[in-house]
Amino acid sequence: MTHPLFFLCETAIRIFPFYFYSPKSETVYLWSHSRASEISVQRENVRYLPGIKLPENIEVTGNLDDITELDLSFLFFVIPTQYLRSVVKNFHWHYKRPPIVVSAIKGIEEHTFKRPSEILCEYLPVEHPVVLGGPTIANEIVRGLPTAIVCASEDESSAYAVQQLLNSHHLRAYRHTDVVGVELASALKNIILKPSVGSPVWVTYSPLP
Image (cartoon, rainbow, N blue to C red; front, side, top):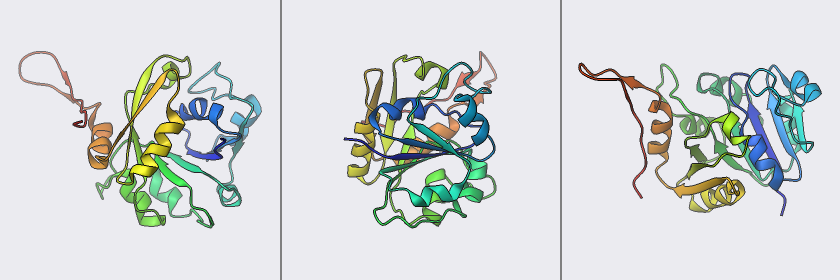
């Protein structure tokens, strides 16, 4: 079964998901605000993943309105948190069959302190988006190195659908309902605490089973 996908991706964010999901989808659509032409012509993200060619079934666009013309199964947001609101508030939602909305965004919005899923729910007719989190490093994933990811949502059927989409021979996807925990862990995982004695401590989080 194929799954038409669309990824909203900004320049400053990694584009690792496209290498994962494209084998299970007939066509993967990628939107980029400022580098669509470059990525489309060169078939790679020269700045962030040089030498890694995009699969042929990935179509790149710089026109946000292109999204409303498609019949999608999944809609992934992979945008830096501080730019998410400016993009999603201009998003025209005309889907007859709503796609599953997925956030692969880490961070907390300045001033409002809102999580990405909260911002999405402000502007889109979706109650329970799926949130992704995990130790995913772009240049390792595209080389097929093993990793794991969490698909969190209060809608377990949506989380299950995303889990099945992501699972592969080198990626293990797990389901969870702790959306807040996964988003906060993703936002805080790179904070370094410097205790008075000893080396810096990396703060990490794992939702309880």
